Length: 391
Length: 146
Ligand SMILES: NC(=O)c1ccc[n+]([C@@H]2O[C@H](COP(=O)([O-])OP(=O)(O)OC[C@H]3O[C@@H](n4cnc5c(N)ncnc54)[C@H](O)[C@@H]3O)[C@@H](O)[C@H]2O)c1
Ligand SMILES: [Zn+2]
Ligand SMILES: [Zn+2]
Image 1 (cartoon, rainbow over the protein chains, first blue to last red):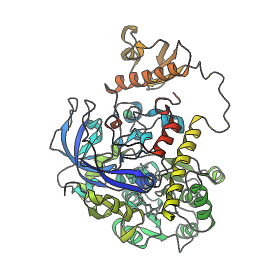
Image 2: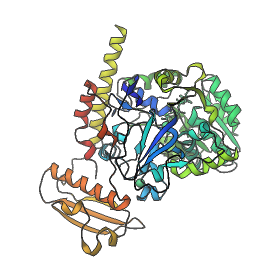
Image 3: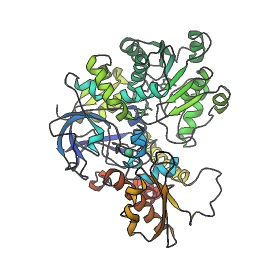
Image 4: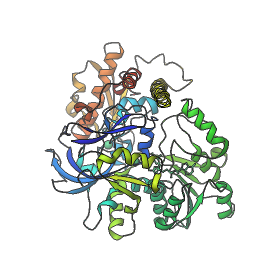
């Protein structure tokens, strides 16, 4: 079959690879209908997640049709239209049972790497390096879905493909940031980053009752899209002092909940940008935490910050003093999608949550390298490139 | 030329990144070397009650096949069963084998299976950065803090 493969830092190509097969009795094979680029892939592409090998199939946010099930799959049958969670859970370990699916203890066949790096094993993720289990990604004609009863969700009739697609990763990630960030009715919420994830977080905050939501980015088309489709306020950080603006919009308090949806390759202005840029390029600092620092500084006393952006290692100049003295709560996680996907599909069916508009560029799988180039450099207003292997 | 230099920088960076990642995995910066490292019990918690983990005192597979001392007790709260084991033979190899047995035992009891990786039907090819990565990671994927 055809698949989009990582070949090296900033190098992708479409290759012929062997079809995936059922390896475990609880597996299913899904024929991929649509699979989208995600900001997390940019970290793989940039070489910031090192456990990648030339030839690895990437992609993790997808929908498709079940074409084969293993003998121990009970809840799905061939022919079903499904959305699959990007993070793989077993459904039965203590973490999965407590709805912390990205902490699953049985879904990563290479558990030692994250165990040693972070002091704990984390879940497998499709197409996300050998540290996350070495699973093939979804930018392919077919993909193997382990523990299919727990990771594939039947898409209700009436939910469009391109809405359901984002119920795989961007929408549950955003929802998790708002919910576990503790958004309550009446809160003011600030969201750093207006990519797919940030926009879904902003929408979730509104649906959870936030009084005001303010999203921050630099790209005018993303800011305009967020204002229009999410229905929130926006700030351009290249022309505005974000912290000062947030104080002025919140009676001097600062936002109650700050959601960071930018990640380890954050851009910035002034000295910070140069400092982190050089250190990261020399591998003296693994991650650039510019938006995290800003969020901690801007957050109201006693407020909370949720880190949705992916980080892999150590950061410099972390404002621990502000965190401690302002009594802040800081959390983060890879998404616990299985906890939210049924509810999100419901919201989509009712029309309360729309996501299809994020798919600014739909193309064939053969155009994968071009799609990533557009997405990475945010060319032509690209928010998400979506590959349709069979279109 | 510019491309070549950029390529070399990217390659070196990927190699360095991997090596650094691997170095940072061993212990926290500044942590003392553990004098008991080679004799500590390896502990794992299984989300099943002790009666299901070892019915009538019979150790579960594949743990039962490893030459190790084993003890277990119910975990605090609703967390299931804590199993502790340490190999009778010295050396990192027997500890690695025991780690794998503990993880597989847990997965079998909790899910009825041990998940296999797509790496078995590989799509990758050997490259220089890949070799650097292999060296840096060594047997890390079977290792861990466990
Ligand atoms: N936690 C999870 O499970 C999970 C899931 C999906 C994605 N992610 C992560 O979420 C992040 C965003 O993903 P995405 O798909 O939206 O990516 P994206 O690249 O489309 O969007 C990132 C946005 O952040 C903006 N940005 C950069 N620096 C900024 C700054 N200093 N302040 C404000 N905005 C800034 C960029 O302009 C861009 O629009 C990535 O790090 C990705 O890895 C995490
Ligand atoms: Zn993602
Ligand atoms: Zn699990």
